[in-house]
Image 1 (tube, rainbow, N blue to C red):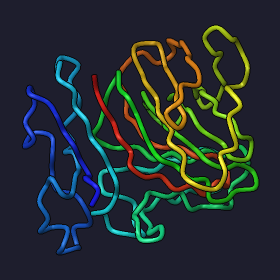
Image 2 (image 1 turned 60 degrees about the vertical axis):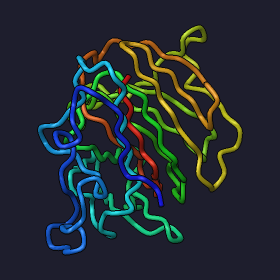
Image 3 (image 1 turned 120 degrees about the vertical axis):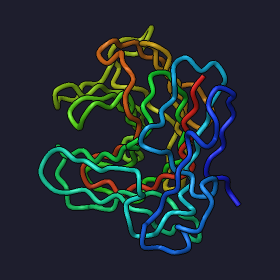
Image 4 (image 1 turned 180 degrees about the horizontal axis):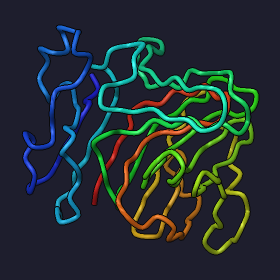
Length: 249
């Protein structure tokens, strides 16, 4: 069975960072241990002063299906709607964006309410299920609000990976270190299965990996401070996400 949260650190205790989660009306979840449910309390964050590595992993197995996970909030910009919920994918619980009637100028966002972090490594498995306007998705980080954050996404329709900033609601792709404005990077065919997207954030430098291969680096100083982390899709993309990992170093 997959582990929902793995933590390795000395300066913070497990008791200070973990709290029970799940639907308050669900008896099984209420009786589960905090380690099994794997939530983080509202006061918890990764302190920049903590030297030891801390890792939090969400695999969604203990969350209630057909509901937005407790401790997460969803947002969208543009016309339409958004519908983030835990669903069953062939016996495996995943977090999915399921609203499929959005125009091309629409962004779907879900963020963790408790984790606020500046430098990190983010990893997730994602599967582009459907979408005519757009497919796939990726991470948001240094999220302040629905109009200000960074995002990197992998798109199976275009078979590319692009890193953007969204500033005051305007999305702009960022130049690659050593390559300039290329609109991200083309990649091997992503297909209809799961791919692993990884991002290393250190100061103003962002390094992007796909399926354990480094793709490119970006430097940008628009949002230098700690912010929330989460997941992102565009337009009508129905996308499944699993094994989201947040690691501070």
